[in-house]
Image (cartoon, rainbow, N blue to C red; front, side, top):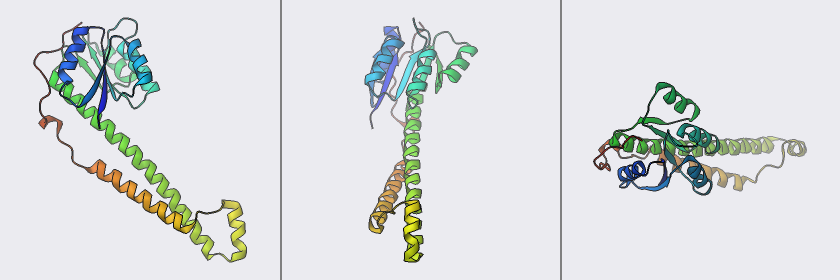
Length: 215
């Protein structure tokens, strides 16, 4: 699956450096020169991860990513700053729901690997949500099967009262088909979650020489 990574910085040389770091990775790369421009991109484009500078005119990276966390909760945020302070780092993590906080100039390999791992975690969480929904549907179908069994064991004269109270149960054949389908979906998701992934540390180094320069 191709991921989309949005790079936000008001310095063109920094954006070019980020593109150089990630150009060998299997991502679609988008760029924005301000938080406002990035926000417009998010309205029309699905983005998986954002790397944002902290010190930008108009709106800081932390403020921008706090809004992203509110409106697009499954987008991962990473902050870069050339003027690190502990209060800024804590604010970025607490208010912006930041996955990682990097100081410029940052280690390019560390940044590339962090992005890969963040996206892997995001994918795993998405699969877990799908598996949870499958499990919920399975529980509903199992309860439906129990109702069918209760109805089968009741005298005919009592069945109408139960149906009037709990609703008409699904037909047995349709129920069995639905259960089989949900079991298959659950197995598919589990197989996908459990499938082996390459260790990012052992993958080919996508990072060119040089470091990001401070603003």
